[in-house]
Length: 317
Image (tube, rainbow, N blue to C red; front, side, top):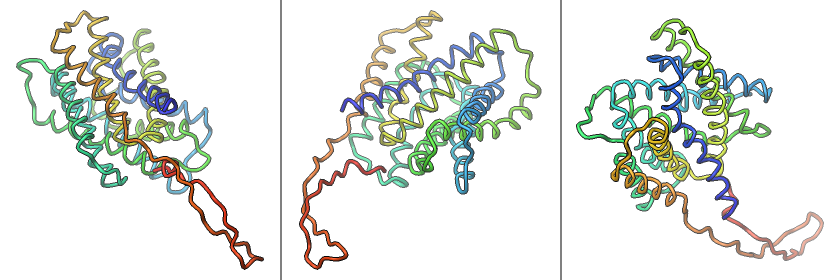
């Protein structure tokens, strides 16, 4: 149990870190350059990890890394930023919070993780808690923004499921796999950013510091912890850590920006955080059972009876 707690705690650092993105973006980065910001988050981090690991994909992993990079980074970032521009921040966060429900469905389809009433209710409770934290009265809805938000959530959810399904090639660490995905995703964003936003803006020292934090702390390290956690947790458990991101953003906004945090928001935090914790409490794994099997050597006709332990929980999905 202590090992799982450690894995969950390290994985949770990723969405907690992502919760600081809004503060860094508004306080340190040039305005109205979301695609350039996505590019600066992904590509430098990916190239750095490639240089550190010195491993490139082989065989089928060229297209697998490209697909994962597009789902987790390349499509996710532009769609997320489009939703953020078309919708108030609270509405965008609520639309994004349906990700666990997408993951439950995709995991059942591609991973054989049977959805349970408990998992579905936990995902709904997490989304409801997030809505209390961030949704403001009179928030406007925009169909294009809502569609972009849902597609961004679906893209990230599919990335989680396929990252879990494909694992990583033998002899390749999670750091190298993270570098492949960030580089592929950054290369997807690169032409879109220049076509939509034009040449890069002039950058100040504060801008460079903000981009450095987003690229290395908020992206390279965080995505490494995220992909590592996906390997060790069920897809639904990992994605139910997502509400930690809007919770962190709300706390930073209250502490650093003086934003109001009333009783309704606090209640929403309690509900979302409780759902996050509850989502990590999986069913108890069966104890190993000793069974007796017959082992035959090539030179003996009689079977020698031996005993061995079989642990179903040791099989990787």
